[in-house]
Amino acid sequence: MDVTVRNLTIGEGKPKICVIVMGRSKAEVLEAAKKAVESKADLIEWRADSLTEGEFDEDFHNDILTEMREIIGEMPIIYTFRTLLEGGKEIENEKYKDLILSVANAGIIDLIDVEVFSFKLKARDIIDEIHSFTNVKVIGSYHDYEGTPDTAELVYRLSVIDNCNADILKIATMPHKKKDVMRIMTATILTYTRPNPKPIISIAMGNMGRVTRLLGGFTGSSITFASIGRSSAPGQMDIEEVREILTKLDEVL
Ligand SMILES: O=C1C[C@@](O)(C(=O)O)C[C@@H](O)[C@@H]1O
Image (cartoon, rainbow, N blue to C red; front, side, top):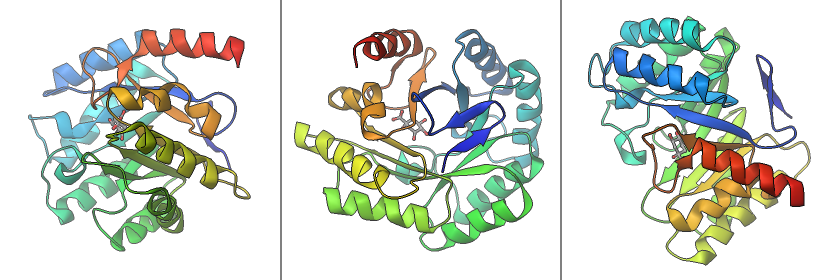
């Protein structure tokens, strides 16, 4: 079950490269958006939690997105507000929900990240609501910056995200040993080889986890995140480096 947004099909062919746009103010965000266009990435993720100006103001976020769209044209946009527990900024549950629904409803973006475990069973309601009134696709996500659960737990979490009706299933955890990296890769391949799998994004963070950013296609991970300047997570690499390595790997694998 591939996911198509604009001219991009996620889950088909090679993993897509997504660059991260961050900035404290509208000016910084739009400047980063220009760099994202120059990078010729497949899509961009705006980490809206990096704002300090108008940080929780829905209208302001939509206003930034309108100008961002003019800059980036047809490149698909992921909107992400990462909460404190999962590596971003503190936000009240109700505010998070309002922000997500308002941005999805405005229809400027193509994909939106919804943290499935930050809101327990309510994540499904948020996702169903987004699907009921927009064409925006949902990335259901789970991040653990402290460690990596065992393989069964990772597979279980991916299935919970799936049952919440997310269109794309995403897990990112912190490995402490090589076995942790293998757990992420195993959980991905086990989920991906089920009948009619949804696209998966799986990441082991930190330097040890870089193998998942470069060989994700082997296990069924459909997007790799790269930076243009400032990275948004440990172990994330610059887009030029990622592209060069992926091109080389493609020649030999
Ligand atoms: O969840 C992800 C993946 C990520 O955490 C990474 O490790 O590259 C970077 C985040 O910006 C993004 O939302």
